[in-house]
Image 1 (cartoon, rainbow, N blue to C red):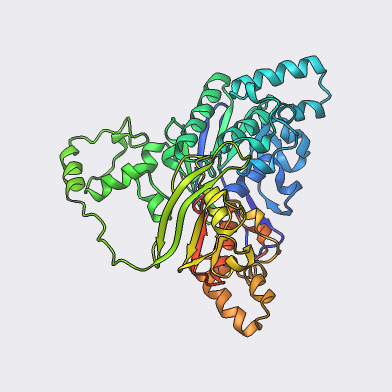
Image 2: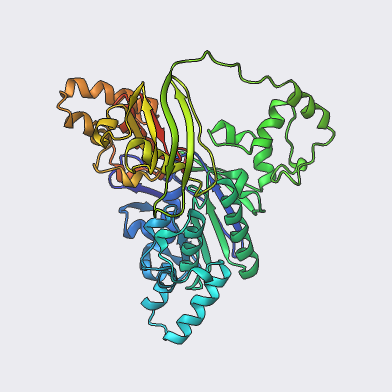
Length: 456
């Protein structure tokens, strides 16, 4: 099976040969832009019905050629949980959203209520039936999206990077839910994901490794992790596998590295312990002058429940700082206050000895760049070059000044080969890098990246 978007000069998928059996649980991995999501779109019918292109070869689901079926018919066989849950919601509240497919099928009201309640209970969202989907946490949104496809009782569940916007703890719960549903219903599950270690928290039957539109390996997880194929193609291995390799331990299939709880070091425990003891800590860098100071910052959205309470920290020049915390901890809220999207209830922001607490978004934007978590909320042009050059053009710079800055930013983000590509042809992870380039090109003193590795 080969597929080429009409907007591209080369195929995105080349000579794909793949069989997925009923009741299997499959993990598809690969670097950003390798064709994973495109393969998913071919399976669920978005290609060729929503995204047009040239198809050669055969792709059948339950014996029927997908290109000869309507997207409505395909949706009865395969349900998709999208990477961006917000883009999947159609109902005003949780109950309406889960019921949407049944409403389209004109299911009698009493039967609809019964099936919606049953699915809501299965995904643990029954007590939120009247809540707006936009008020939910990332993990809860994921559950509502899953409920919306399960209510139609499809045979195949396709998850397109379900962990992309979830913290590790919430992601673990999401994988546990997917595994629970898989075991209880016997449905075929196809998971497209970068976070291999998190997905392998529960067993999968096979891992399919992709790069450059091709399938490089199709094997059980223990065999994939015993090879070097992941690291050779820029795909993150589980951290415990990397640690073993740093310690000089050769991973073999009989070590069962697919799950840290099953990992058998086969007598290499002392070797790993010795490496861990000797591993040098990162050398302490020379101290720099303070650049941004956050002093006693407090904030609440409703004036009652505090999201941030007396937060203080300092960011130094040339420093790389990580702000971590579970979903809902206030990380994004803090970022929005720093760039001016939200106004704090109390506290101060000091930038190079200047109080910027009351400074406008435009004034802050000249020194602070902000990359949103969802790239689709930032992108407004159709071509990559135009998107990255947009603000520079608005500043009145000439094309002779703009082009080298755009090319440099795209090179840093690994997007130079795609400079003239349409953004619609990019993966979620590549779109993310476009938005990072669009901020890098402005050369701000501070760059804030909200969940930059989601989808990468």
